[in-house]
Length: 300
Ligand SMILES: [Zn+2]
Image (tube, rainbow, N blue to C red):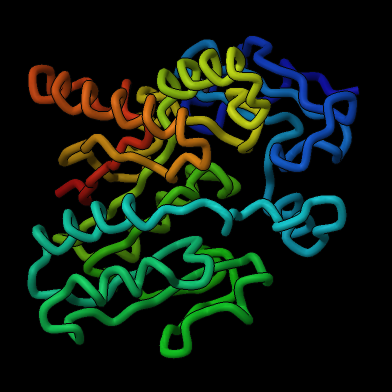
């Protein structure tokens, strides 16, 4: 039996949590990858709002999951979602801030699709040297031929200090064990004037989408049940602050393309509204965007 009160929040280190959801074999579905692997519980930190799975998502659990896909078709690190539009948006943001290129590391890079998007949008095409870290072995055979991907978690790659001009974690931060240590590693290997970009689903949007999905009978949109971590704005602030990182700007990102035309239409309308609102109120994107895109730098 897990003593849920004994778990310490990885972002703010408080120990008081509130129950959010049970995930278990009683509601099996292949589209909620954490299901079917025994009972898990999602909790919300009372102090910073981080939602996390217990037992806590650790390096050994993640490694085991990546190595054993039985019962989890497609694995947990995606591949099915269409993120092209999202990636193009992020690539444009990076290139506008780093027009001369440099070394770019994508953490959780899957098959390296983002490198292709970057290459396509850059002038000259050779402006960037791409590095990938991807611990999920299923991507090894699927990577683009001229991309160098290290098949390990980032902290086992041992990159030099102050090495990268740009580091990205796209639609993947929620799968990384010990995000506090991961962000500290990013601060170490990012150049002092480097750029760190990540996108993660927003909690408000997920709640909204879950409500609408429930009305449409979509189990896939059930909120706070798919990933090991759901970051609130405050929990991200804590994590970035501790790592010596600070937010430059947060943009309204779209996330993956919705497969259902009806849902896609609703999401597009919502995004347009979120963009207008965000122009009026600059603090809104991390709260209301489907996938807020965080542009981050090292603290001086
Ligand atoms: Zn917390």
